[in-house]
Amino acid sequence: MSALDKILSLTETEDPFRIVPGNLRQLQLDAARERFAQRREQIKVLDQKAKDRGIDDPRSFEELIPLLFSDATYKSYPESFIDNGKWRHMTVWLQTLSTQPIEDMDYSKISDMDEWIAELRSRGHHVVSSSGTSGKNSFIPRSTADREVQPVRMDRNLKWNIGAYRKDYGKKYPMFLLMPKMGSYTATDSVTRFAEMRGIPGDVHYISTMPQSAVEMSEMMRLNRAIAAGTAMPSEIEAFKKKSAARQAIIQKEFGEFLEHLISRRDEPVLITGMMAMLYRVVEAAKAKGLPDGCFHPDTVITVGGGKKGAQLPPDFIEQCQRFFNLTPYNFNDGYGMGELTDYCPKIPVGEGYAIPPWIVPLMIEKSGETLLNPENGRGSVTTRFAFIDLLADGKWGGLVTGDRLTVDFSPAEDGIAVPVVREIARYKDLPEGDDKATCAGTMDAYVRGALEEAV
Image (tube, rainbow, N blue to C red; front, side, top):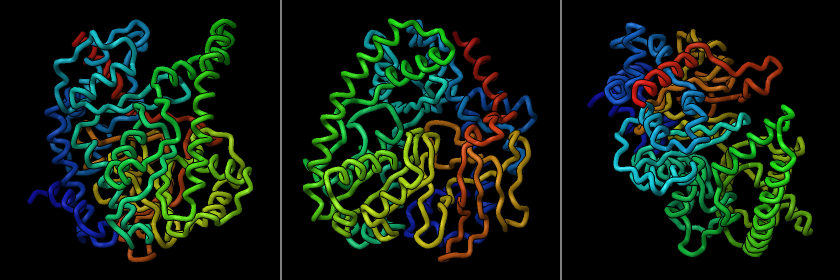
């Protein structure tokens, strides 16, 4: 059995966070080398970067660092492709980052990015998108295998760290999803798939039927950017306001109906999942109706992620949610993750932090992204830029430099946890020092542009 197979087999064990091989770090390195050998055959830009750096068979994590992508890599397409409806060109760009051939696209069905994503998905390429403050969407390749493994990993993580879920493991729940029923974003698709697994058929409820639109999100971000620059036309602003108001009216109506139904089920165990910021909106609205703290069934399971996501929330919004739902390790799960990860790091049941699964290899690098700072003896904590190699990833190269500054404890002492634990999380762009750029990962964009120019 290869090192990669040994690592991936841990996904089937009952407790991959406490029971791990003693030589885990070496196994991870050998597995990462295997993944790299596979992916360079499938992803031309990765192979070219390795050749230019003279890296044929990396013998250390230090040698792998120059080969990592960044989140900017997944939005390295020219904006003119979308502005001018060049969907064939967008597909060629996506192919430079995908492990699988993208074939037989019907471009007659595509007039915007939402339809482009839908057509890709119909061909087995389950791309997901996200949009930052720049207004430029990231598009992350995912295979069918990636799509299938995500709800399974969510299910296993909940079993591992939520007592109420573990007690009745395998049961189906009335499920309330704090997100729209459809959309191109990572969480929307993965949580919807999880609902198909653990929700009672006919008893799964979404906060809205209005799809998350990559087009509308991009338009909003671009307009905000234009307003800040003073270049937005009054007619553009007014048109977008009208469009947003009509959409918001529907969303608010559906949110009210969702809330009423959720409140009516508070005396029975239900499962609530979605974004932490939206959970607070539920708490805020329910308290406005006079509901007291602790009024939901004690076996109600709540699993959230995402933090504030830019929302304007009171400093104690998490504490308010905890009091209202009586959140404890028995019924509550939080997690650390991102769209580029196939799995996420679940909150540890005892203590503070998030356990990093064995198939996510943490690489703590200096802020510029060039030097590995992992402790040589495998013990102690490091606070710096977080990078990783996602060994589960199937549709893309799993190596990435993030914009997050983490504190990672490589030798946690609590509750038998034998994997590194994330203790603190911050975004570099939110810190006083600013600067969300990593030197080495940024150079990968040039390889993507070069491959794109050659192909189109």
